[in-house]
Image (cartoon, rainbow, N blue to C red; front, side, top):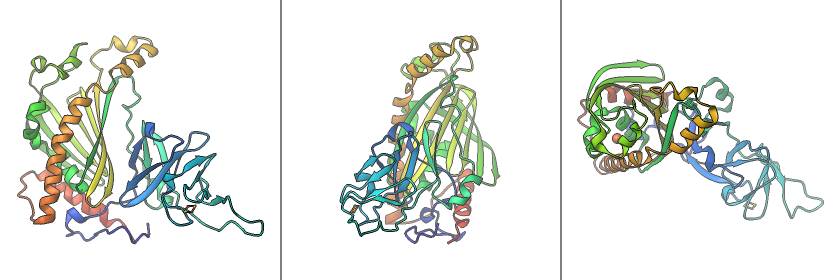
Length: 355
Ligand code: FES
Ligand SMILES: [Fe+2]
């Protein structure tokens, strides 16, 4: 990605708070439902990108920069399969070529312009975009979220938007010792890091912890609203950094994802997904698909209040950390060895960027 706007530090001793992303991965830039035939402007590591659906409903992703005078294409509108700039009405087709200019005179030719086009895929309720070398996109698998459409899982989703480098967020997610912050939400308790595996693009940290929630009764979901129904019990808690995203399992009942969209060096967006498994109810799985879908859809978002509360508390800490770093950078006194591995992976990934 030969683009000098991306200030990426690639030395292995580089300050992790200033390290760039490895663009040769699939990042999540929007939820499917957010992209319509109205253009949507997003930002991925300082690159403005416009997303829209063409007439067939297929997602298109172009640099959000009109080839005429470089205003944002996302201020315009979709016309057929092209996008029309708001300023003078130039149209750019899905390939990034200039397709029409309303005031082009008979003897004038369309300028030969090329707006950057990004590989993009819609899968599992999200829009995945590959900001690196397009030729590499077919060799890199995207993470995917198989539980999103699976009828055995109840989904909740919220957005994280924090003014902090992405390393602060992933360290927060890999460090289960910060349950202290969330005591009023009773998310988990007594974590102990048991094992740590590093393997290429991923880190798996295995904790033993106590969980407050157990999904074994049809009314178990009411534990979300009535703390008196919760019972602490031991569960394995696994957190994984599958660069650039995060996944977690708590016992057999919960699966959580954090899908990253690093906006820039001090701004990170992400989608936090929570899945409650219905595996404990085999009889439910014998019911007609339409009914199971109805149950799944009716319970969609039931953990959103919990997620929003956790995110509010976390974002405060992450933004404090970023500010503290900017005003007086000092290495933290870290005791959790999982975070040493996380920082190593972030640096190694950044080193794989060739300019
Ligand atoms: S700036 Fe886009 S058409 Fe003129
Ligand atoms: Fe947290």
